[in-house]
Image (cartoon, helix red, strand yellow):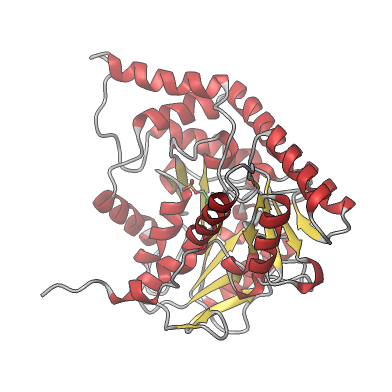
Length: 411
Ligand SMILES: *Cc1c(COP(=O)(O)O)cnc(C)c1O
């Protein structure tokens, strides 16, 4: 007899984004004439830039000719692309990684989801709270957590690292010993970036406790203030205790094209394993479960995104979204609302007025201003009382949304 994996039943019902879609549809049904603006999505909206489109077209052209056609490629990704990531991304930030330490993938979400599977089922996990839901849900499915407690909003056997106004949304190192420590900086949803000092403390913690840090740097290209780290390996000791996951999704508009990478340094060690073993096991996992990222996407990444012209265009693309972030910040400022982020990340994390619950504010914003955002409570218990605005959107839509908020939101 077959049963479903019972851990799926532990997942909290009413996934955040489906509940948002439900409430939005209900509003639409009762107000068919009204336009709804969306500042809720964490999804890119602007078209591919010219150099990036050309890179992708070259990927198709290579497949068109019998001389250059290729089928399956190396599971780790094209050699030239891994070399280019080592050169363009890491060496530019003073980090020396070899191409053999870089694995190309179909995105950062699958990699942050799958990476836990190479560690022992008994490994404990520590997470920022609020958090990008993937890190938590995949560990729930893998059976590393206990039940969800409705009263606290927490799973048993998970170490939550609160990110609050008091600590500037920078987590303290856990007081307990954690196996895997997930860090996302610049952060989704709080829009804040971890300081060098705080990352150094985590690296030291990982060394002391033989933990592994999973560092998600999907938004590193959105950092505008100098002095912030784009890669955790800018801290030299991180090579022996951290895995870094990143993506072409948000900086190059590849959310639908799909391309990312994971760095697993050869010097990374875990209990009972020699240097190189983690890299080998991740390779084994990927070559068993995955057949490589699309070669069209990889050529687009190599000849488009990572070309000099592509890099320049992608910086403009990011600047467009950060311009939206500024419009949102200015609008909230005019209304006297308190908020964080939006300077080194495309998210603005707003404190709800009068300590409103975040879902109540969601309904109020939709009813009064016809704007959709994301309730902070959906990202974890410390997200209650906060609300996420996303800077992904067309300029005129973001402007209209903010005008509507300024004119119609009753504060
Ligand atoms: C959008 C996002 C990603 C990117 O995922 P892809 O699978 O590469 O599209 C990764 N991490 C976080 C925190 C994100 O918000």
